[in-house]
Image (cartoon, rainbow over all chains, first blue to last red; front, side):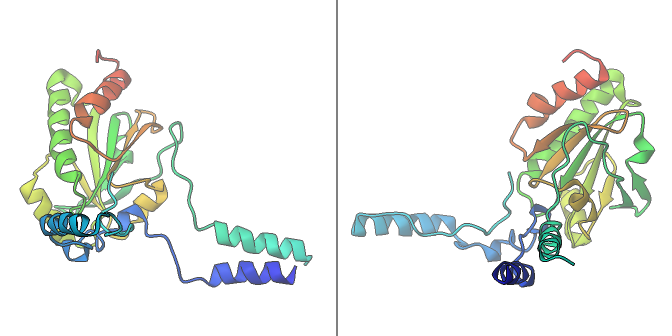
Length: 68
Length: 171
């Protein structure tokens, strides 16, 4: 029981919170993009795939407008 | 206090922060605020008796560059069909920066009422599923349809038939 209380209290004390769809204005700013230049990023990925015979793993989820 | 009650209370507090999305059939939450351009009080209640398309948008929302002009065109078409007194679009802007919102309206002008909500109070009340989202609200103030996101042509393909059905016209 004490363990359960501790876990729940830890969850309540967590600083993490979900960014709501209407709060993504700052994240949607182009300067916040993982790849500010999509064309350059595509060319880099093409070179990488040719040299390494593998692709993907170049980005992360969570940034941007999150629209649609 | 029993331990189980204490843990249940903690869990209730932990889960109370997540709101449930508004479903069709529910009465639309009170929607009022200052006009984005002129600052005049604007509200959904003042449109009671009309079918209302309540649209949430922001200047940083890519699909909104499509949705605002297309909703403006749809509103114009419906008003030209004689539904000016029975249908209106009410748009809620959720930008924290009012200047960004007004710059967006300069580039994509609309004639329907715009309401500013920089604190995000209204999208929270509606538990907005995504940006943009629109709510089709009947003349009785109840939500008839929730439209999440926006793709090119959605106004004509999805919203217009639903609005005309509510207005009793042919789709």
